[in-house]
Image 1 (tube, rainbow, N blue to C red):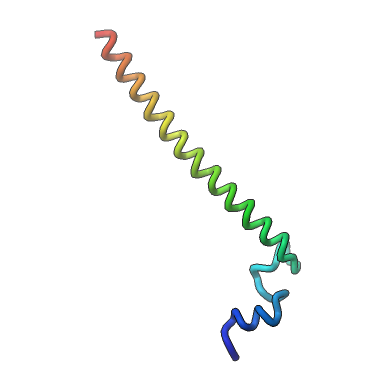
Image 2 (image 1 turned 120 degrees about the horizontal axis):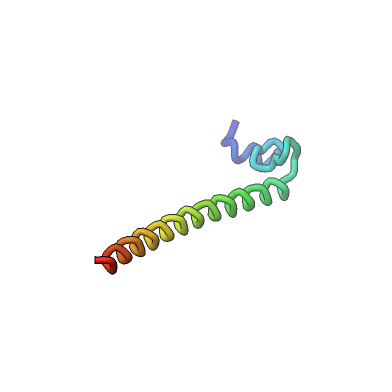
Length: 69
């Protein structure tokens, strides 16, 4: 028997990458992967934004403390 990739070329319906909600749906599986990738990017961007906002808030607080003195 050859490689799994060769088997899936002959039987694409058996490739787990072509399954979506338990049925053979390569387009649905592709859309689901793209949506998951977009969600991951949104989470990354959100975390980066939160860190930047925290940095700005800390700088503003430090700056406000210096002005009072």
